[in-house]
Length: 263
Length: 263
Image (cartoon, rainbow over all chains, first blue to last red; front, side):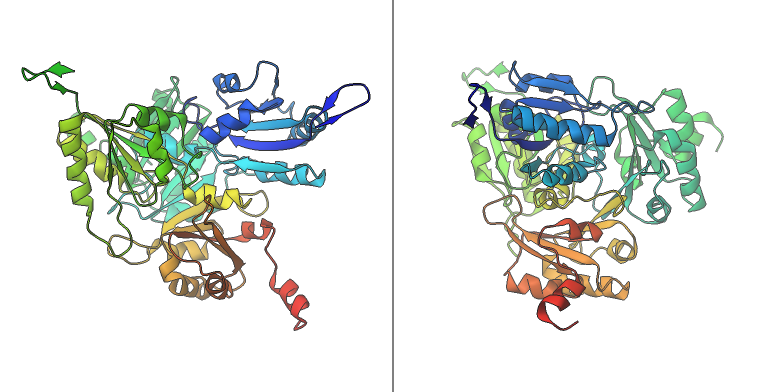
């Protein structure tokens, strides 16, 4: 710290990118809590549980910089600038991001921006929804005999499209998790159908780990319908793979046919 | 709780699978710490930081059930039986597992075993090494313009082999993370070479997030050498993809050639 002639204390600017986890306020790390404890400013996203702000001092400045679908009032550039500006003027900025900062979180871009101003920046990993949200429903991304790998793909790339990687993922034997893809579910389902995966088990989970959680479980060819029935919308993730059969609510096509007498 | 005629208090058996994170004792969640606080027994693995045991009561029974490479004194079956036996006799068993319980952790098998004895069991996600270990070195698994997906594969399947999924992963544009593969590095490198990926950036990280961390950064065709130079051994993860170029120590082939004057 330096003391200016005016008597104002200027703290050394630092930035900590912090993963806030999937939503449940207890699914944040001890290291993240300690970072929040020493924050002078917290810049937080739309998907961050606001209860987490209580780990910061009462005097800390808390700034909502959420970008919700269709609301681009805070561009990434604006967030970057705010982050650096607050660090220079207030000291320790915690940039609190939903899930993990490096899983489609543009976290590395924020680190680069901080570095361009020579502001020390570090990152504290968070619990990624990609693994934890199915996990909390007791769907494992890997399981002996069912899946030896998992592939996490974005449903919304920089140009707003589904990642081309999803075409390969649909053909693979990996468990496939799609983040930010619920708005393109019909299109995503076509990709799996074109890969011959009509009966591959699938689930859609909205607001996983929170009290607002909603779940739809089915197969590639039925998941659109189940998502409609359950009014599932963003934020939600999709999971495709045999591991979905482990969920208590999964029923295979033959069981469904048995149940409704159409076998 | 029930009080027996003998005066002994019998607690209701419950099991909590807890992800201990990658190694750093502060990379555990608040929810995990709360579970440990109420544990009567903690069964913990080889890769778990033993400092975490301090979150459990002094009176809690702490049992090491680690399986290190080549040491099969505790089979999965033994661990399952111990877990259930302790739950029945002591009450709340926390099964503390390295990383995340559902990322190649056989966590679901433990849940199934608990269910077969009608013992309530839940899972608390942990920070997975697959994402966090590269992240702490400021290597993001996804980054706009470099990677729209990441694929996590095991280097050691149930039959001890590299997963067949790795052959597909090597051909894909995903960032590929291989867990438990360091002992098969030469074989894994061949898979990437056969996919034409000789100059794909690659890194190997041992004991990530701990004071024993070791890092080797290079390319598919040089990583074996770098791993030898740095004496990197198990436990370690491998990461392949353009995102590795973001690491401060990455140098491209042309830079290396420039440096040693062999261009």
